[in-house]
Figure 1 (spheres, rainbow, N blue to C red):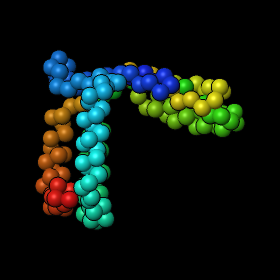
Figure 2: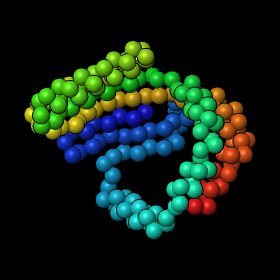
Figure 3: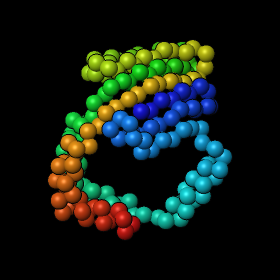
Figure 4: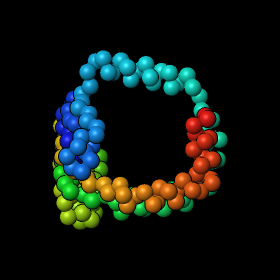
Length: 170
C-alpha cells in the first residue's frame, strides 16, 4: 500500500508492506525526521567514496538481459492491482507547453486506465506557473509464490551468478 500527497515542496505519505494482508513487514512514513535525514546523508557520502567500475558491471549484465526480461514478465504476472487512484496537477510557465504535455499525459493515462479495471488515473493542467503536484492511493497484491520458480530459473543461469558476484565485489 502506497499513499502519498505532494503539494508544493512538501511530500506526505506512507508505504506499508503486509504479508497475508495482516502482518506488517515494513512501514515508512514520510516526511522523515531530521535525525534519519542526517543518517542517510552520511551513508550517501560513504557510498560516494567507493567507486565501482560501471563498464565492468554493464559488460557482465549484457548476456543476462534476456533472462531478466523473462523474470520481469513473470513478475508482472504476479501483480494484481487492487486499487490505483492517482491525480496529477501539472503546469509549466508556457501555456502552449502545458497544453502540449498535458495532452501527452492524458493519452498515457487513457491507456493505463483501460488496461486495468481498478485504475483511476487523472491529470489536470495548471496555467499558474510551474507546478507538479499529485496525490494517490495505491494498493497492489503480489503473489510471491508464483515468483519463486522464475527466481530459481534466473539464479541457475551462470551469467546471472557471475553478475551478482561482480556487483558484490565491486
